Image (cartoon, rainbow, N blue to C red):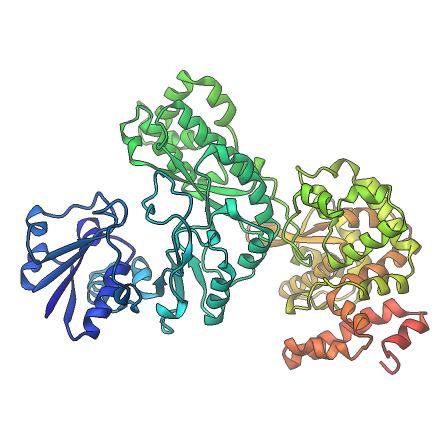
Amino acid sequence: MKIGLLDADLMDHGTRHPNLALMKLSGYLKEKGNQAALIYRSYLEVCNYDEVYISKVFTFSNIPDWVLEKENVHIGGTGFFTDGGQSLPDEIEHHKPDYSLYTEYVEEQIESGRSRTVFADYLDYSIGFATRGCFRKCAFCVNQKYDKAFRHSLISEFYDGDKPYIYLWDDNILAYPKWEEVLDELERTGKPFQFRQGIDLRLMTDRAAYRFNHTHYHGDFIFAFDHLKDKGKIIEKVQLWKRYSSRICKMYVLCGFESQDEKDIASVFERICVLMKYGSLPYIMRYEKYKASRFKGMYIELARWCNQPQFYKKKSFREFCIANQEYKKSQESNCAAYQAMLDFEAEFPEIAKQYFDLRFDQENIYQNQYGYGRKYANKPLCSQCKQSGACWQEILTGGPEVEKDFIRMYYEKEIDFQCLTYQNSECASMVDSIVGRFTEILLKHSIEEIVDIIISSESLEPVTMGNIPQLSQLDKGMFHVIEILMESGQAMLFEELGYYLEQKYGSDEPKVGAQKKYGENHGKMAALMDLAVVGKQGQRAIVYPSVLGEGFYKMGQEMQEGLGKRLLLRIPMVQNVFVNQSVGQIDKDMEILSLSTRKRRRSNVINVVKSIIEGNENLSNRIGFEGE
């Protein structure tokens, strides 16, 4: 039988996504010996087939009435039925998609001059649902058929090993209790993947934040902030997420659904305000009713501002509208953006006063993050610290057992002085007292006592290729980097730090490229010791003093040397030497590096260990350091 498959959304207005139901149907029909092909040039082609199946996702996609009236035409999809209509039979629903269905269409489009990038979803992805369903039943969402999330299919059901990526259309992956099983399956493929419908941030847990941020995720993580009533939950969960992620969050912001008046505009601005503060990019999703609003212009300009990150990150809404006006060739009249802003401000000056001048680069509390050499990306929720007994305030009054607990957590990197630099840190006003007290605690405990605390830990940071030290002179990483940074009073690029290290403490004058590597190696060593922060300025790495580094700089030489040795114990590979009580552990940990790199790095780690155990025969004997 000759069967035609018609993607109504593609025919009417074009779409960047292939229709999954049609691809499954095509695979099934071909397996049964039928001839199945995509109809994409003209609706007149419908007359050339024995049977025609039309799938439509969007209600606004138009199809000629005469096509729908034909007896051999069968329809399906959310564009026809608000509840999705009748489900596909299991033998079709669980058939591997026919990824070749759109091949002829895509090849024609590319040959006509269109960019291959436009058709990436057709060419580069295995596509499917691992789970279906969502319990929320949001009024604006078409996914109303199911009351809960359940397992729909194994990844292998739709996986194509020739495709470089995977994307999933799951409605709400975190609503499925065994979501980790899905992640495990995805990770076993070795392919980068993404959930196209986004992830429900309101269901985020510490475990989920950790798992998702340690997977091979493709592209940006996307969440949603659709209702202002969820403000408290979003603020809590985005901080939980940022604990593990240094990347800017992206969030859908629904507007024009519940109402299309000034209250809805204010709601959008308030949600944008929250997202600005917590380092997130809003993506304005306009419900179609906005078109009938007298504030249609404001909805359009809000979307233009927020949905173009290059503007949102650098300009307030007012500055964006003014920039549009200044760009206009003729100044005899106002552009749409500027006029929409003026009109709204004239009628609602209080809303404009509260929101029009907010800027992401001024509100964002995550501008300076933990950076290289630390276990987490950002600070935890202060409420979590209090619940777990890891609040810095406690060391100001705690006894010996509290002191040991904090030493353990410090070397596990579960606590970090850098959390005191965040605007929302409840301990920020006590920085000097906390740093001074903890320094006193570390110096009060011998290196051997600290080693024993480290050995008792069950949560040390693993050794990675990135946290194995590489440096030429230990003193430069321990003392000279922080001296240069503090005396300069500014953050430095790697090449700048390398230059000043050479000028002040060395006679060699390497080339700029070598200076950059020189500064990088010693800057990172200082970060591993918690004396500096290696962060980012745009796309470039910068080095600046850490909270502890600022205190370290003010200490006398004897105190610096004593604390410096103790800080060397923060390096994961050094910790492993003492945990396994063998200097031979260095060679085992080095196996993740190439042979040539091992030779260079091994001496670095040996020198660090040697500096720690100097004058301590007992520690030397414990790790078998003799002969090194």
